[in-house]
Image 1: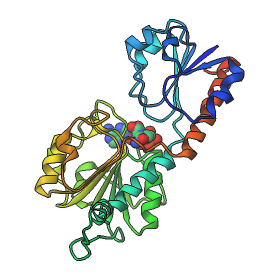
Image 2 (image 1 turned 180 degrees about the horizontal axis):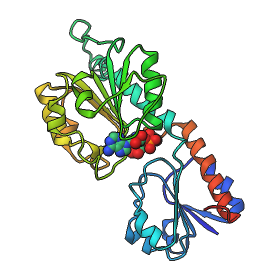
Image 3 (image 1 turned 90 degrees about the vertical axis):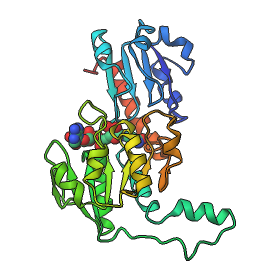
Image 4 (image 1 turned 90 degrees about the horizontal axis):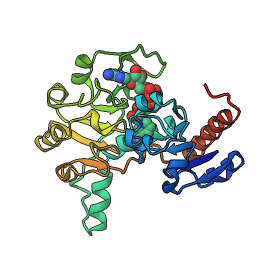
Length: 294
Ligand code: NAD
């Protein structure tokens, strides 16, 4: 079998897959690939899939499958798998790092110090202790976030379309109840027709003045222009995200808005997680090679 690595994975993965067939990262070989491995960069559109008549299996190393045209793959008999469990800790740690960095003004503190300023009196930090976190979409990653927030002495409420039970949450609420009571929100939603643009002007208006928003879910679950307006008016106290409407981000007004913290979709990109993703990919390929993949 020919396995095409269309995005970057842990450097050890090609060697681990060699026993199953030919492994290549040459995208010109898509037409003869039996298996394509992707992360978030490659978009498995209808056109991409149609260029690969031999294709039998797509594996997305990561959680969301919004970069795969699953209906078209299914219609062509191509199996689509992801590695949903591997990334939870990596993404939760990223979201938490952002929730610490924003109120501690770490980016401004660093940049101003490097620029020769000494803003000791000007910069005021704020603590997470006794603050309320609202987790919007509380599955695997959201629960890891909740666990960390409880360790910091926060009150944790969640909004989700399915019941969520955990010793680390203080209650589940409707979105309309959650919005006015939280100091921080962390978004961990998949991108669907229901979640697209969920955090918009109307919902931001229902939040506490100065609430901060962390987004390590998907960029399109927020309306970026509404976030920008709320950052300028002070309605939102901060916005930290590693996901954008378009990636790399083209919205220059967002990049220059106040009280922001940005990263280039790094949530899953820990060394440890890349190894966990490789482990899951090898397992799937092994099952596929043995004809055991359903
Ligand atoms: P998950 O499926 O375990 O959790 C998602 C939760 O969202 C579920 O509990 C689900 O019921 C809930 N949900 C779905 N639709 C909803 C709606 N309309 N309203 C409220 N809740 C809703 O997934 P996960 O592993 O926790 O990952 C969550 C998301 O994080 C992924 O879908 C992906 O978009 C994103 N992600 C980002 C990165 C990154 O690098 N930043 C990495 C991995 C995953």
